Image (cartoon, rainbow, N blue to C red; front, side, top):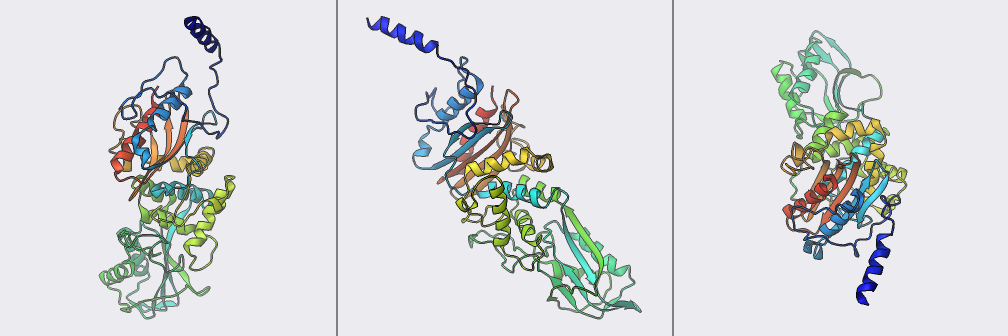
Length: 420
């Protein structure tokens, strides 16, 4: 009798439809009742040939998160199929967590939206008065554009512009205009022992030594000058642009994302506040621009906290849903995506992913931003699945003691996303 009943039940379930491939947009995927196929610690995840690709992916990810590491650490994860415009998997997508350097994605996409891909980071040199008998009867002003790439070639060009005027002596004063940002040298919520570089609008090779290097170059070119300088706003009139040096948005993004350079990220972040033309804007002004972007995604910025542009601050809190929304937004707009995508680290090839995912389907496939703080590891970006669907994802691990443990988990997620 039991055998007959078992056969009847089995026959009934075999008639149920199995053609539901995608979830409704951003619908949560339950994981508690999912069938786990093998140990989550295995390097490979078995695939059930009777299931379609999305179902296999969900089962494999559901299996993976049944790992003892999540008994004492936190996870927020969201995987979205851009090609099908449908959520594939989530676990804690609404959890507020520290993003670490994954926040640089939000900074980059906000910048490309508000400033544009053609935006220039420009440092300008001005003079007042006239040059008579090789003497400048006026002042020199340098306006900082917070360009982290300004280096020796740029400084040489600045001083050559003065030398080409036949200048042998500056008979006035030398001023630096530092009004692009506030006077704080470090970001809000940065730890005292982070040993990060000073955030100043005038930098030389990323260091706060611009004016000393300017004086050195004047000496090298035989131009006499005052031995001190002052900070002062450039006057509204009576100044002439003598020279300017610029670097492009793509140059900033490439180092900022590939190498996860915090200084480059903050340089970009502070451009938001400077765009309105007010003097000495604070980080809160730039954060408000990011919040406006979050609002444009259909989310409430009050649900998050943006403190800086690099993710270094311990005050930053975002969700996987927010990061995935931003990645979707970027992908839908070529004027943003074509600048963002090439600048992301490529798995097993370059940047902060050079030594990760060096084989298998994820190799040279996953384009993603890493993030690391003490106790925090994150990864978010794009990958192409075996059926040629473009996927975006965000993985936030928090409360971890070993970055390698989090890296192994994240790499396995990427393997599952990209394998047949």
